[in-house]
Amino acid sequence: MSDSIDRKTNQAMERLAGSIIEFIAVGRSLRIIEANVGQQTFNCLSKVCLPNENIMSGSMFEGMPDNLCGDVDQMMTKPIFPVVRWPSQAVVNIHECGYVMAEPNPSNPAYLKLKVVDKDILHEDVRITVDNGYMKSTDFIDALHHDLKKGGIRVYKTEGPSNVSAAPIDSILKTTRDVVVCLKCQSWPPITDDFFTRERLNKWPSQDLLNTISDLDCFVVPIGHPGTDSKDNEWRLSFSVAEKKLIHEMCEPYFNCMIALKALKNKHFVPSDPDKPTSFCSYFIKTACLWMCETFPNNDYSLMDLIRKILDWLIDCYQQKKLPHYFIPRQNLIGHHSRELCEETGIKLG
Image 1 (cartoon, helix red, strand yellow):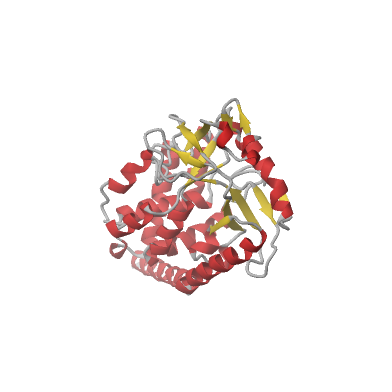
Image 2 (tube, rainbow, N blue to C red; image 1 turned 90 degrees about the vertical axis):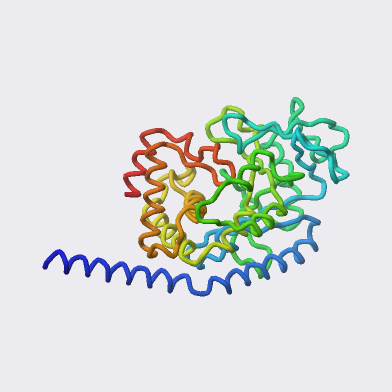
């Protein structure tokens, strides 16, 4: 009798928790529309100051509730930047400012170096970042700070994925923006070919969505792998535009899972040292939910069951010390973490 009461109590508590999460998620569609309008408005305003292309990404522009959003992530590319080419691809529609050739890292295929084929065709502001035939990522960031300041942006150098943290300069985005200066790729890298063709148990993303994503831009950002000695010369592939589109199309239950897991992360995974990355971050939650969308039909499980399945998947990843990148599964997102840290994180998630 007692077991039956406990089971019913647990079921009632889970239904209540699921209802609370669903209530928090209300307004997702409206937030996505507002984000798209904000993107277009910001583009118009920024062109008055600088002729740059700005792409807003991150939680706010993925439709997350305001209380779970941090700074706005702003990807910025300039007309003077060269295009990134892949060795196996022919030159097609290369911008007049030239191109650089990608040299992927076999050990960490989401990272690469940018070899300069012809320095003379690069813009003079880019040429100064060339060192021993390669574009140096750290010099590239430093060389652009002056231009950002000229555009009225108060710049603070940061560590991590963002190149600089910029104070707001308009009334559309009233929060601080993490600016990631990046180069546009000529096309998606060949290493992502399997992403568009792999078999998916849950038939998601659909073929139509995959076709749409294949037409979106792919970028490289000036940041090296944390476990390499040559990170000053390394760049990382970025699929932020595709991720934003996928999350906009993600079914509601899995999006609600992202909300719940991000709230848990914010409460239980607060880094003791703000200058050091945490072992469990929002990007890992996003990665896990995208993988699970491919695997488990959301109609077969309750919201709390889906959250448990995602947590079980993450715990297994930390136990094996291997969390596969969504677009490039050969890239291990936690491969540079120590065995002890992975075990500690897995226990905490449990």
